[in-house]
Length: 74
Picture 1: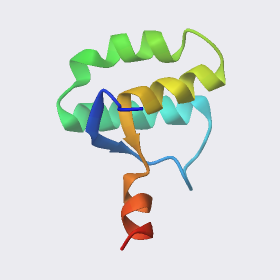
Picture 2: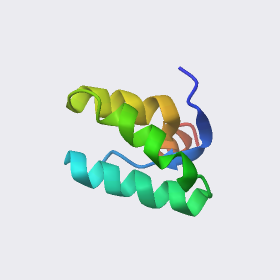
Picture 3: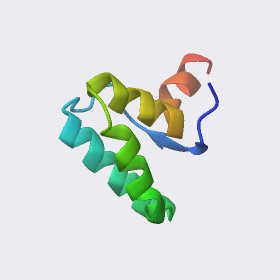
Protein backbone atom coordinates (compact mmCIF):
# COMPACT_ATOMS: atom_id res chain seq x y z
CA UNK A 1 0.00 0.00 0.00
CA UNK A 2 1.31 3.43 -0.91
CA UNK A 3 0.50 5.98 1.76
CA UNK A 4 -0.91 9.39 0.89
CA UNK A 5 2.16 11.08 2.47
CA UNK A 6 5.06 8.58 2.16
CA UNK A 7 7.57 11.30 3.05
CA UNK A 8 6.07 11.65 6.55
CA UNK A 9 7.04 8.98 9.08
CA UNK A 10 4.88 8.16 12.08
CA UNK A 11 6.68 6.07 14.72
CA UNK A 12 4.50 3.30 16.14
CA UNK A 13 6.81 0.56 17.47
CA UNK A 14 7.91 1.30 21.01
CA UNK A 15 5.41 4.16 21.33
CA UNK A 16 2.22 4.43 23.38
CA UNK A 17 -0.48 2.54 21.48
CA UNK A 18 -3.41 4.28 23.13
CA UNK A 19 -5.74 5.73 20.48
CA UNK A 20 -5.59 9.23 21.97
CA UNK A 21 -1.80 9.06 22.08
CA UNK A 22 -1.66 8.01 18.42
CA UNK A 23 -4.00 10.83 17.40
CA UNK A 24 -1.92 13.37 19.34
CA UNK A 25 1.31 12.10 17.79
CA UNK A 26 -0.17 12.29 14.29
CA UNK A 27 -1.49 15.81 14.89
CA UNK A 28 1.97 17.01 16.04
CA UNK A 29 3.63 15.37 13.04
CA UNK A 30 1.10 16.86 10.63
CA UNK A 31 1.65 20.32 12.13
CA UNK A 32 5.44 19.99 11.77
CA UNK A 33 5.03 18.77 8.18
CA UNK A 34 2.85 21.74 7.28
CA UNK A 35 -0.27 19.72 6.49
CA UNK A 36 -2.32 20.56 9.58
CA UNK A 37 -5.06 21.82 7.25
CA UNK A 38 -5.78 18.14 6.45
CA UNK A 39 -6.28 17.23 10.13
CA UNK A 40 -10.09 17.35 10.04
CA UNK A 41 -10.20 14.96 7.08
CA UNK A 42 -7.69 12.58 8.69
CA UNK A 43 -9.48 12.72 12.05
CA UNK A 44 -12.90 12.01 10.53
CA UNK A 45 -11.55 8.98 8.68
CA UNK A 46 -9.48 7.70 11.61
CA UNK A 47 -12.33 7.92 14.11
CA UNK A 48 -15.09 6.59 11.86
CA UNK A 49 -14.72 3.07 13.24
CA UNK A 50 -12.85 1.03 15.79
CA UNK A 51 -9.19 0.92 16.84
CA UNK A 52 -8.29 -1.10 13.73
CA UNK A 53 -9.81 1.66 11.59
CA UNK A 54 -7.53 4.17 13.32
CA UNK A 55 -4.46 2.04 12.56
CA UNK A 56 -5.52 1.45 8.95
CA UNK A 57 -6.00 5.19 8.46
CA UNK A 58 -2.57 6.02 9.88
CA UNK A 59 -1.01 3.44 7.53
CA UNK A 60 -3.01 4.76 4.56
CA UNK A 61 -1.82 8.31 5.17
CA UNK A 62 1.80 7.97 6.39
CA UNK A 63 4.94 5.86 6.36
CA UNK A 64 5.15 3.80 9.54
CA UNK A 65 8.40 3.16 11.40
CA UNK A 66 10.46 3.97 8.33
CA UNK A 67 13.61 4.23 10.44
CA UNK A 68 13.24 0.57 11.47
CA UNK A 69 13.16 -0.58 7.84
CA UNK A 70 16.24 1.51 7.04
CA UNK A 71 18.15 -0.01 9.98
CA UNK A 72 17.09 -3.51 8.94
CA UNK A 73 18.65 -3.14 5.49
CA UNK A 74 21.76 -1.24 6.57
